[in-house]
Image (cartoon, rainbow, N blue to C red; front, top):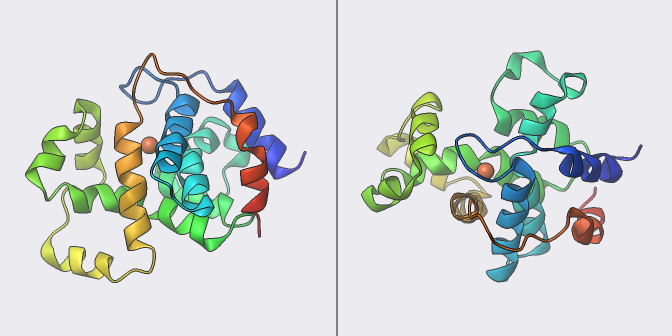
Length: 178
Ligand SMILES: [Fe+2]
């Protein structure tokens, strides 16, 4: 099976809820992509939003686990797998979307906006970045898109909204392959 069909079937088969939220992982990622579209983002950022938590699907399918040492870090697992197939502009913001949360959490308003489970995972992910770490992060090439992706991610947990089908993103996914 080629990678696009595999991704689509993972989206369709996923029924598990996004940690502590009321939407499934698939719904959450599609909502993120819909928000990226609404914000008139580039195709690569829409694609990054759509796949940003793909690492969770890999963790659910141990046969896809590429590197055991990355255990549990879904952003790295997703990145390591997806970078074999997708452009840098797609996979780099995915790699940094957790760091982006740790960066944004320095802002009190942003922190207060986080859901309870997101506050808990923030701690597990290393907590709020300090000044030095923040400056280093700001220098990264895909810093801005990582921040944008994070904001779509944070808002993509709504229930009772019409969700697009994963198949409607097939051409977009194909357009972002290496
Ligand atoms: Fe997410």
